[in-house]
Image (cartoon, rainbow, N blue to C red):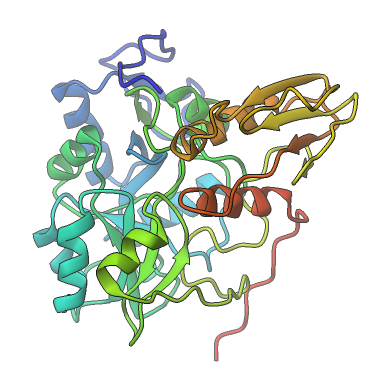
Length: 352
């Protein structure tokens, strides 16, 4: 994937007249100049919604200290209110204002921040972050993104920003600004358009609130890298009715077309999402290859964009070739299994 900025034209109102969230004009797509970042920060402080790039996917950001602003995220995404959000901050000092760190969590933060790792840590007493962010849990999921536009926005906003992926809940995550505009439309007031995301799958979520580290969601930092620092890391079973982390719903990251995994053949009315050499698979209406050379980093970066490209009514289904269950392949397979899961949302579990 090229590191060159996306120079494709953007649409929407011209800079100078940012529509309010919900405007019939739709969102403004602005290149992330200092002035545009300043306008986005003002909108966040005013309780509005801003989509911005991170190294993983585009996030839908709002003031994490405002119940009303956080509720607007859930409404815009159609997201279940029992599904926690990740809070983004510009540096470790800002993180320590909202969560409690110990020696272990400081070591992890020093090793992997800024970057695609979210830490679940105990909420600091007196923390101003809305309880809606963590679905009433006594922990908060927090991370420092590596993308320079995200860091600049967080510094300019001057407050923690809750930011799930900038898409309708359960659908394919956005890795370009146009994905955001197509998915959310007038539900978001402004999009900082900075081209395509580098990593392409969401952050790893690591729970350090208990005695043993636990991966709640695989992502851009692999289990192997975490265990090199921490020793054994568990992967606990999930309860989709009471998730402790984003991305734990059984059906998630789903395109409109059915997804069929571990395809050894492809039907004439199916699209193929291939990995590695695919010449032995004949047929199919069309095909895209996540990485012809079998590179898992390239495959992760291409995953959501290629799922979106194949998600068209003329394709009866999307057949996906097997992906190795190692390294970033663990995160890729996690997203694909959720994309292929039955499209039902669990009822929230009653509080105990």
